[in-house]
Image (cartoon, rainbow, N blue to C red; front, side, top):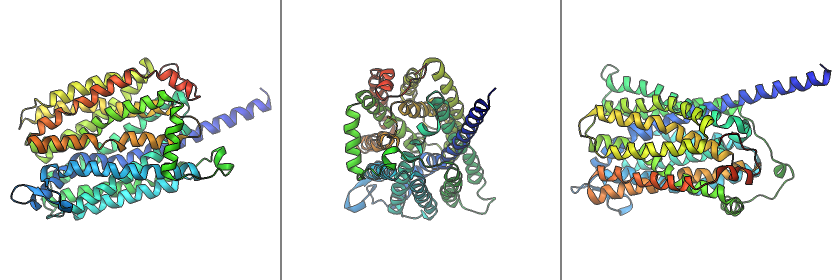
Length: 453
């Protein structure tokens, strides 16, 4: 073997080792921020903020933020919707800044630590402070959305096409594993709060705040291991664009990639259903089914554990059948599961656990494979701006589901009617995704297509 061959092999091995190290650091951000989505958004904040709003409500059951009459039971859903609308305005700014400067890490750090600080501040939610809770929720959700724009845009840079389904799935698996681990600690604190010398309400506030501390602490790992890369346009000193100007340019550019745009539309629809289920399931369980907080924690813990296995299993299915077919299968499962949720009897935890198991098996895989599939549709050098558009599809239109959920409850007074309304998002998303020719979309983006996609 020649000296040049040995050197080339050594360089290749070193590059692969660097890539693996960077991938492991990338996984840890899912580990860091997913605890917010699990402990705060899915389990504790919905019931907590709803009870605080009820304590502040007038005799007819309404609160009046900014003078607007809102049924206390709808306040959390409306606040989630408002947080998403705020996210729409700030995500393009982050994507444009990242593409303009090539410095994603400082922006990722700023978003992560603003979100973690807002989450830690939820320790002070008590009495009738529903407006404080709404404000902190908006800040934390918007910060998470911005950080995910930057985080997701690393995927095409740290994983070649044939690795992306697996890398993306492992990231989601890390996130769900962290969520499960912290939920176990939350469950111990909540059930044994007397033994720890705190009230039940204080235990909930500690659980909320601890998610912010966790988020901030583990963000240090990806900030150390991920590295910024400057594109040729950045090296050449291309003139900068503002956030909305960049977003308009991205949309114009996507017109030359209509199949990428078609995928984003499908994702926008079915992911809205997914995000609404995540944020509103605990409210449905506590308010409609009359389940206690400990039951909800166990149910979400079950979702987390099964989501780890589900994300990894669906990653393997994608290698055998392609990501598109696997996602379509998961949307069928979502439709059946959420439709069945309408018929759950009140006060029956066992059936709620069955529903949680069904959600867990498809949740992680749907999200992971959607992210990795989109990464194949992004033209090289435009990762941050395209993933800004992706994140707007991920979170920027996810206000519609909570809005419909909240409006349905406000008009009917029934959370069952509200939950079954979400089935439409999965049916329409399936129909739209089925029409997208993903292999042609990959070629049109100028990327090599894996054998199965």
